[in-house]
Image (cartoon, rainbow, N blue to C red; front, side):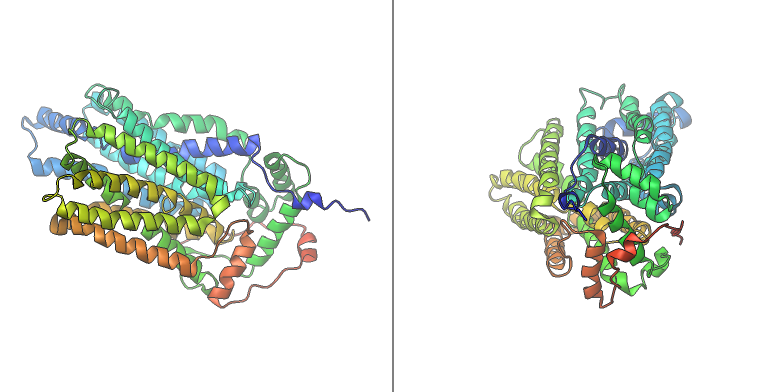
Length: 506
């Protein structure tokens, strides 16, 4: 019998269909997250003025400072609160509706708030802005989990890292464009801010028009819907060649392997021994990502720039410069993650971040005596941003997709998303008080968290580059001290149908 060995050995490539599907999914989803994180930061004085003027028109007096601060704090904090809600509903959505349809339905939470925020000035209602921040938060919470799941399942194993980091690449692009559009000379002014806030609806509309043209996740179609023929058809479209049986076999093996796990909910995920270290790992990665100081650095950046003599009106341009560094390093990470691996990028990133925090602490302490150290502080901010963009920001999106199989992935992403948004909310709430209490020494806390996270990654998390989901699961099985039954290839090949199954419930 004649065999053709090159076919099975063929590596996946970035076909036009795969590239355009990634663009349509990421621009319409991750971009929303990044844009809405940043869009209210630069024009906050303009928006607070609108709040005050609206209040005056209603009640004939201006708000006192404490009430205005409370309203603004609510406006900002509603975004991560909405993100938490989105993270908690994403599991049932991706199971029942599929990955692609979940992303499409999610656009409701971008288009409605875009309309509300765009018309809030005419309606003289700051409540519309606050409500909209909740809705765009839900949009971001769903997208932050559903998008990496979709991209990770579309990608061949040799491109999974690159496509997985696209979530963070487009988040950073959203942040950067929000910084540009928020400049006072563009839309960050009393006339332009309604348009600035309403722009979030544009990517949503573009995704609604483009994403339906591309396939659903073949893994979802085969393993959870049981439609083998449609999965094969979608795989051929994504890979650009006819023979996709090796990948079909690999998905069948995954389905057979995970049948032992059964149906996993969020609650029994915490007591399921075969996934113990995977669950701990995503909690550590998400906690480390948020508590390592990135939001605190952003919060403290303006003070550092001012201490270096940067005019407050010019600090917005320095912020844009930091955004450029962020984009460059994230893109570099996206194209080196398959070369250097996940672990190395994470440890390098945390090493740079921890070192920058230590040096920044020393610079801030001795700055009153040596004013020239203020420039070292700015360098530390840029170095920290570069380090975080190298590993801690983009790579966890890849790892969290890779270390869970199909049946447990939605529940795991709900836990992952909840940790992400809760820690995001906590650091935004607590850091100003920590900074006021211990000042520059607060960055030593972040350095310690960076060190702990790097050690954990080195000791616990295996390299997942160029491995199938089943192979990664088998590596963790040894750490969890459980056995995963080996499935023979003949058994996988004889697999004829995949029953519709596995929904994620609380």
